[in-house]
Image (cartoon, rainbow, N blue to C red; front, side, top):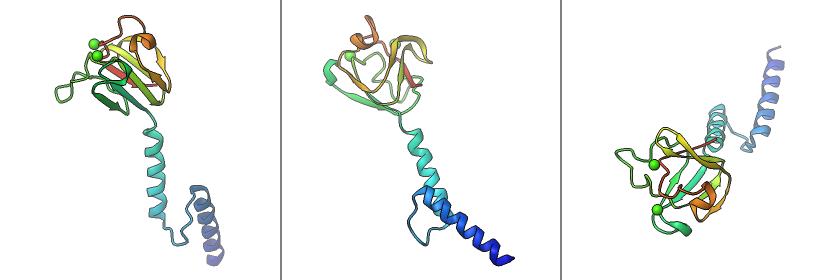
Length: 135
Ligand SMILES: [Ca+2]
Ligand SMILES: [Ca+2]
C-alpha cells in the first residue's frame, strides 16, 4: 500500500512539474514554490508606464510599475505636475490631477506612445498629473 501511495505522489509530482515547466529531474518542492513565486511576481509586475518631463519623450523620465498615489511625496516629487508625454508599455492606466487619485484626466490609456499628453488626456492635462494607477 505504501508503495502505491509513493507511486501516486511521484506521478502527481511529475504532473505538477510538467505544468510548471520544470525540467530538472532533481527538482524539489522548494523549487516549485520558487517557480510559483516568480510567476506571481511576473503577473504583478506587468503594469509599466514611463512619464516624460517634456513633449516628444524629451527631458527626464520616470518609470512607474504600480499604483502611485502621490507624485509629490517628500522623497520623490520631481515629476509632480511635470508630465508632458507618456509611454504605456504594459497595462491600462488612469491619470489624475491630484494626489490620491482625485480628478481623473481624460480616458484610460492602454499600451502606446503618447507624445503629447494633451492629445491623449485632453486640454489642460499638461503638467497636471499628480497620481496614476493601473486598472
Ligand atoms: Ca512638462
Ligand atoms: Ca497636479
